[in-house]
Image (cartoon, rainbow over all chains, first blue to last red; front, side):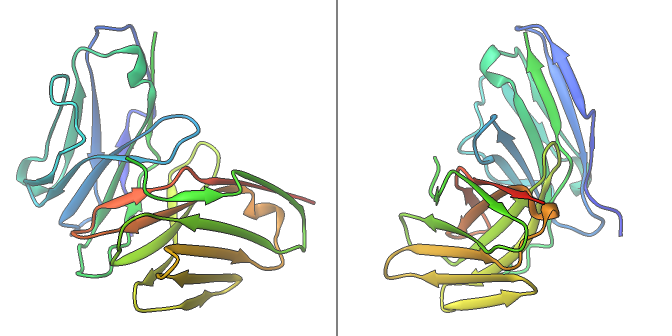
Length: 115
Length: 110
């Protein structure tokens, strides 16, 4: 079974530029998550999709971050404009969403450096 | 916001020794999960323990949960150099939303 795919793996941009990350979840997984992991910290949930609908985006900085999941499969996360504090690893995860058993499968992440 | 607090932040042991990591949390949970993250790679799910369970085993891993103290521990027995990684606890309060702790960095020396 193929895992969660993410691209690119690394990205370096200047502040105020825009950037987009792509995620392809495990086939058949209805739930998709984007996390931000700052160096030395645990992942923080940015947004959770169930199929192509948003379940939770309470911690997404909506003035600069946006995400979409078209057709309930692939997802993109965009930052525009980027700030220095956005430097982090952006992790995508998916799960089958079985009630009371929510093992999440993570992709390798995209390491973003904002200069 | 971070819910889980792991202790210790860093742990260094010799191969063959046991490693114990602790996690405390603040609110009621549906389940608690432990994940491992190797340097530069994504997280891997290790084990899930439900709120009505007290102990769970998986291979060399043993997890305990004390909901009265809002704490959990992860024990890795007979550690190996390949166990070197960061370990995170994550709580699922409801709806599948995981809140991760800061992590414990484990170093196992051959």
